[in-house]
Length: 542
Image (cartoon, rainbow, N blue to C red; front, side, top):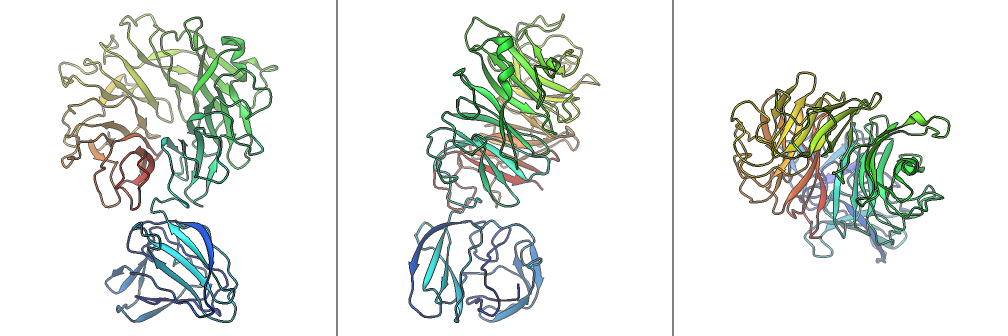
């Protein structure tokens, strides 16, 4: 790439060094002092035929080094004086993929080529101007401050999940500006690639045409190859004429879309809707529920081996017929595809006599059931349970319950909904919704859970103030419980550990427990969050 000159006030790139401008950095500390920023393309304007200099407001200094992205360069820096750094391939300058908009190419002509950083539209978010007097034009990249390559979403986003390698985040959004051409006026499914910064709309047909109805509840396979979601659209595949919500699978990388729930009609009826899908780590096994949406028909759990021909291999679709009473069983499949956790108010075993919603697991091959929302001795619990999540091997199940008899004696006496984890093999229950010092929380945990692949980390959300010692915002927050270390920390914080000024929910812990993605209405987690709707955030854990 050549030589790059950095100066506290006046960096410059000359024509003899580069022909393509590239601005990059994990946290943009090399460009601006305002924290992580991104820049979206805007209009081109004409400038005079004079050299334009590169001006950056501030470089972050660490003793005698400059912090660029995550790499500290051990060079002497004196404010107001220049330092030359040579890095032909940018491996040291920017080892982490950019959080800026894609690189733009400009002809450099015969005179200096420049970059100016400043707040051009007075929104307190830094912007970039790239100028070239050889072609007499300048491109403005407006800063968004929201960690995505482009403008912040203009409507709410929800329900994130993340691939096992932490690269892909999938979510649903009502936004119309996450990518060009979104004019359907419906909720869509989007996939964010953390490596490239690209955002892809998933709720489209195989040719890329947008859906004619709303889509929701996305989940991504552990290997990042498949996204499943439910949609009321009728044009994602040919022959979808039932007028009901169906379950679809999108191939990441291929863009191919298939209807997973086309086999449900044989078991529930042509007017059935299919909902709440989940997918195994390898993307091959998908579970979902299907029902008619009224009191006339059953609610059924289906487990489907993707790609199988049901006309020649009926066993590729496994059906559970007796889930009456729970319109949304929220099935979750283990990473290895062996086990499905779900909610049912119907007794699926001889000892279920409590008349409550209970959490079960099912062997996806044999169809054998085990109830997990039980007292440690296997007896009935006293209240409803639901919102299960499951470890990779299917042995550890997290769920929310209002029952007070999950533990021996009177250990659970806070009289609120808690989150528990059952070890199926050991038949033991462990409470996850505890404070950082092991105390009980005093407000309900929300009806949502997630669990890491090995079952060590569990997320829960609550408005309780005592989950961590410094929780004073009075808002619902997302927390992460480490069941091994027996510690709890708050995941819904800003980059500088700011408490959210709005509620956060639907936390999803990564497979390795290293980060949590969540949705939040808070506007103070990143600079420039002014859309006043829920957004998707990612927090890397200490």
